[in-house]
Amino acid sequence: MIAPWRRLTADVLAEIFLLALPDEWHDHCAGSVILSLTQVCHIWRSIALGTPRLWTFIKVSLANSPRFRWAEAVAAYVARSGDALVRIHINLSRPHEFPYQRAWVENVFWRPEAWARLCEHAYRWESAHLEEIPAFAFSGTPAVPFARLTALTWFYAAPPASPMSMYTIPTTFFAQAPHLQSVTLCYNTEPQPLVLPRTWRMSRLTVWAGPRRGVAGDYLELYMAPMAAVPPWKTLVPALSIVCAARHWLRDLELCVASLDPGTLRGTMSTTGTTEFPALRRLVLYDDACQLASWIVAPQIRDVKIGADGSIGAPEQDRDPFWGDPLLDVAQLLTRPGGCTHLRSLYLSPQMDEDLRTLLSCLESVPMLEQLVLDTENNEDFPNGILRFEIVLALTRRADNSHSLALLPSLVALTLDFDILLTMDVDHDFHLDDHSYSPIPLYNAVWRMLASRRHQQNHGGKPLRALRAFSSNLNRLNKDLGKWPLPAPAPMLAATAVDWSSKAEEELVRVMCEEEDPYDETPLYIEETKYS
Image 1 (cartoon, rainbow, N blue to C red):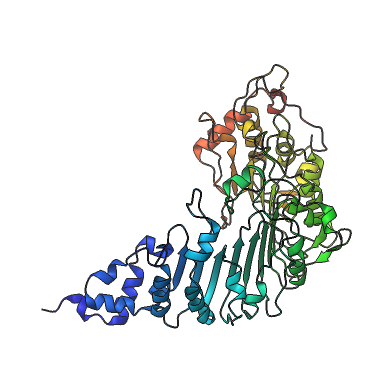
Image 2 (spheres, rainbow, N blue to C red):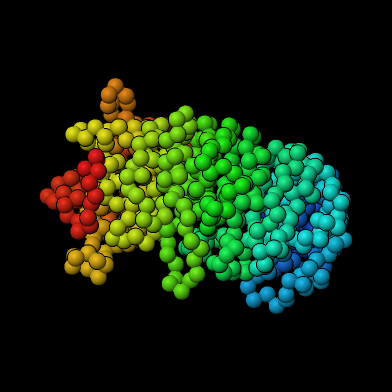
């Protein structure tokens, strides 16, 4: 009797194989995992080896690839993938405590014949992630057409070098890539000014000049070799030429640099004028790259993310200097006449010692905003800080304060992540004039704010939308504090107001029945504003 699976055609079995792939297959290094489907019988093996879509992800990693036979595995994957589009991922960054030096990686591990084999099939590359590829790989191989390449990621963690020894990021190697949509470039030491190939019309550009500063940089180890915070600092200047050249068609721009001396921008761009990005929809600026917000005009922008790490770090740690005032620069972007009228989502993570009124000015300039995130969780400003009672009070709609009714009338999703010390009990050792701090008054103030934005209202003949999503770190560390009455913000929000649970109703009643005003109960100094 014929087994049921033998009645299936090879095409049907191939589809079943694609659906039955183990999880580790989707991110494995070529040659490091044996596909179990090829070990069942010669028929299954033949079908699996003859199914190109099973072999289209070609990954090489210094840490996890077979050290002396990865090139043969790559050649096999190239052959088995037929004419299908392939995704290339090569990471030659050295892990911590790796036993070999960089010279061994380039002269022993690296296999030029495998690279040449991949380049012969460049017309099939759909995406390429290339990390620490030797420079001679690009100079020794003639430029080839990347007819179907849509995404390019290029990381190079160059070792510390003298100011005069700069290298070239090989954008011209990929010059023949007319369908490129996304480009990500990350570097540590300063390269030569980047060249934008004429055929490139990418809609997304990401440039990281080294990792982020402070705590944020600790979480993202893009580069294994630490670099001292001494001149010359990592800089975005070499990348600004490509940013400016691509401004007409960019829809998504992300820039990051820990320290950017404005003096280094002279001669590369006008810091007093502005540059229009007519198609830009999303802008992300990290740390000192936030300075560039004042230079950008983006009439179609819908999503802005500003992350300026505010952590101090260890006292003995060398620090790059902070040059920018992120909120001042963002305020110029948001308040510029004719700009940001389409903005719907704003993420602000200010650095330390920023001005409260500048933050309020930013919020007042975007009445069309629907989603807002204010994040100072990693700042070390306690007991001061820019996100405290003052902002919660400003966001609380009150009939006796027209300014509070006019602030963010379209807001439907809100996240408030406070300085971590504001979320816990703190004794009087923190310069509180012999008073201890408790997060409960701030927690109660947040509940009052949520209650004030619970229902849709009207002010001056215009609707004030109700909050439909909210999250905050204020109740994460204290189990005695209740859950928030609204779901956490998500990309897709409910179309109508959210019903509060019975527990939320009880918590609101408890908060509103408190005899003490939370703004009078806290030992923190509260700055007077027009919302007070």
